[in-house]
Amino acid sequence: NSLHPSDLGLRLPDDVWRKYQWETITRITESTARYVVLSAPTGSGKSAIAAGLQSLLRVRTFVLTATKQLQAQYELLGATKVMGRRNFPCTIQPEVQANLGVCTDGLPCRFAGVGVTSVPGCAYYDQLRDALAEDFVVFNYAYYLLEANLVGRFSAPDILILDEAHEVRSQLENYVKLDFRKSTFRAAGVEWPGDLSASDWASWCHYFQYDVADAAHQAQIMREEDPSPENH
Image (cartoon, rainbow, N blue to C red):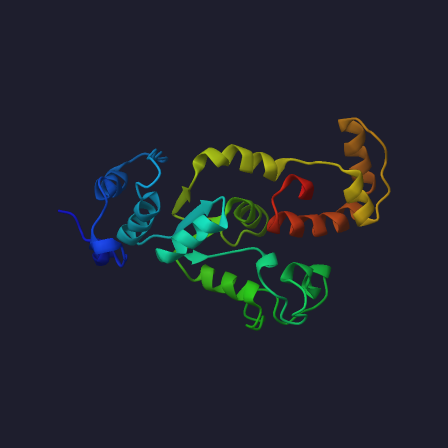
């Protein structure tokens, strides 16, 4: 027998599932496959299926989306939303966004971090602290790939849902791609070495690794907030 959405804490119109939503949820829970692919038309309620699955199983579930609009949609279904620094003001310097705050320059900030020594008050880190305590969290692809692989705070969910899964390949390509642009070198104050082969680029990076590391720190912050090609 089908549970009503309200039985799982979900607020759906008239407290009823759309056609095939509950059947899909139960089939996924009964599957022994490691990966499950759901292909369904627009308007079929895939977000509600994901929310219902998490509510039924009560396990730590992360959802990855490509847009802020989809993040907001999952938030309405009970997910905790995690966004990049550029979406928040800096607590110490309210006139700038958090991606330009003092902590991004390596300067001490009592609000930075989510550990026991950090002080609540930075909206960016406060949302991370809240998300770490929740079992249903929604990220965008670019942010999650950086967080899971470099920071590690959100690297081990029980279920990982890839919304708009046709975006996965391009998102992964953007994450691992390295573009060397003269404009980026100028902005970082690093001299452009000329047009080099791949092996010569590797040698150059090894020789200038500390200059590159400083520039990469700023580039990482830019990529976290804006996954567009010019920030790669």
